[in-house]
Length: 284
Image (cartoon, one colour):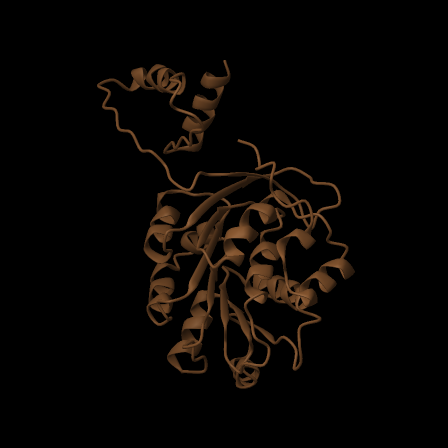
């Protein structure tokens, strides 16, 4: 699948606040990556988005701009939460958001990073300043919520970044408890390098009528990151066919794909080997 040819060719096409376009210009970000071009329009409209995007696709700037476009620097409240699987990513995302929000209105953007192994005392002091955005690992975020160091009653946006890794690290229960304590009326953005059944279960549970987007690797010269992208349709037609023999499946799939009404198709398989086998069969 190919990216929509009508996708914005420049960040100035997104109608972002002037403070964000000024920061983008200073960072020499002029052309959005395909994933940014796909994610930003629905995200800026307040829609929930589930994006399949690898590291380096520009997803951090995609959800970062969507968050910061909604943050009110004058409001003394946590307005966005970004949940990440590891300390290194928490620090990386914090710095990226601070760079994008450099020119936001006084008193300026406050971003906190919370993660295990960091002194709790220092984090409490940071939270007493009421950051606008909190980037955190699940366990440490839950600790602060339970201690009421974070009051999320004015939360606007929740981001689950690298959702597949969050699940690999067995954070399902922590995430469920965290989400149960957040306002139901919020925007939720989810990003994952892969979309196995467990991640799709998160999408169904935590997102409301989401746009489903997918990105693949590839360099975009002069863009704010890397990546190529394609978009899934807003609605999908699901068809079920029962086959008695496993060996019938490739031929039956090929037959279905040849039907004129099929159009663009998303195919799931239960193992990586099966994906490669089907891809080779269909190419041949």
